[in-house]
Length: 155
Image (cartoon, rainbow, N blue to C red; front, side):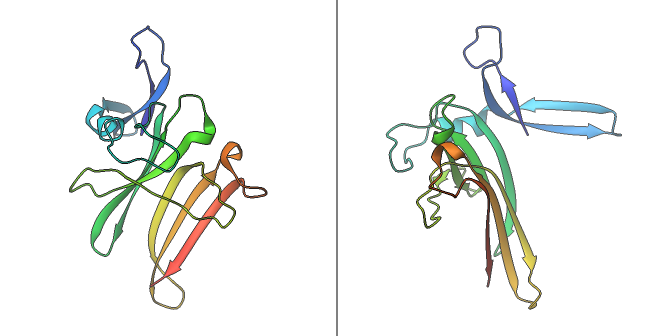
């Protein structure tokens, strides 16, 4: 999960940061901030095209998928606070905890993506497949590419 955090220590929340939570008996939440996960992104050494420094905006949605027996994570992060055109996705192998910029080719050269979801599944053909969905923000979208985006591949 992610939450609205006070990252500038001025007493009010200003950016999203990562957390984990345990819900017990559908009654009690135990939430823990995960600054070590935030730091993986805030201390990046390789960046998406057009950026020369790590993300400084919100760090939000993430998802995990088992692919070829390896658990991988998709993570969204915003390079510039408040700038929706600067949202990008990262691929993380939790064994290394090194986020890698995920360059997505939409055909129209959209560049701003968020809300990643990945699912490994069995296709109707019986073959293994992967379905990845995300949202293309209008602020970074190519003409007529804003909105939901799906990638589907059978293996």
